Image (cartoon, rainbow, N blue to C red; front, side, top):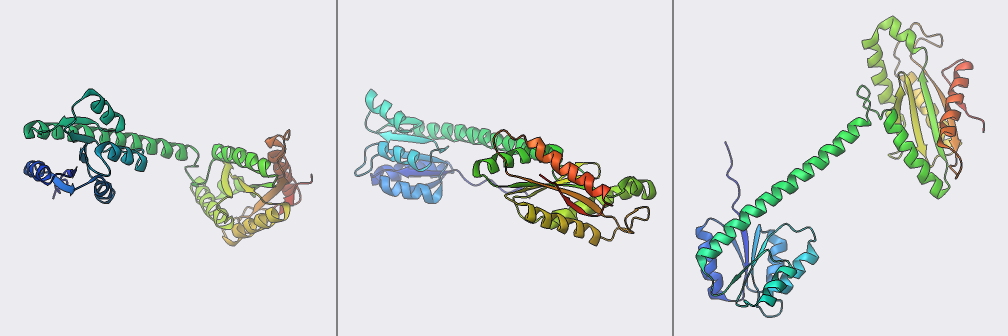
Length: 319
């Protein structure tokens, strides 16, 4: 079942009861939904309440006239897409220019020719719809581009950030920590003897193992500002902004324990019967002149030392 689209909603603002009745009757006959306001202030209130598709406003009204009404709408909603047709007895060039400068999209003089008015309204409805369609397409394209950017930074298997996503985030947080003189920690992580695991159980099982390890790491790293990424193969990396060495070691030990708690059997591991992980931690306070690669290299060296010491452990880089 296809639902009919809602009727076009028109706000008519005019202090003349006869004009409101005459124009309103014609617009209702054309199938429009009509909202009436007897002055500019009431028109502003009705606009905010009903969000009309088209506005028809009298130029000459007491208190808040049509020109001030248009200016008020521009102040309230700077990105307004609602077209305005000004109806007025003023037909001099200065008034016309003033109407357009105030924000009106079209202009018609009194006494109103209903045939001309109805055609102008129909034209404005069509133009408004085209503008809204273009705006919607632009928003959808912007969202699509954002989604593509997100996908470009995600690892397709684990759904963690990939190496590119890690590098972008690390650079962002490095600069942020530099501004506030706060520590940043990096944990480089590697699944122990993962090549043996793949050789023993096959690559599909290896992929399932990576997915489980990724989920365990994500659950162990709980702050929204922290990032877990797949660095490549069986290697992962964690970025911990505003985290000192003790805090980073604590997180690293949580990760190591979470992976062991998965109890994924690894019969060809030289460490134990279950999949385990070695982790290297480095902490630095970013300062001008210190290259970001030094932090990555330090965590990588600490990871190498963890492997050299027997794996399934956390080693802190020595400054």
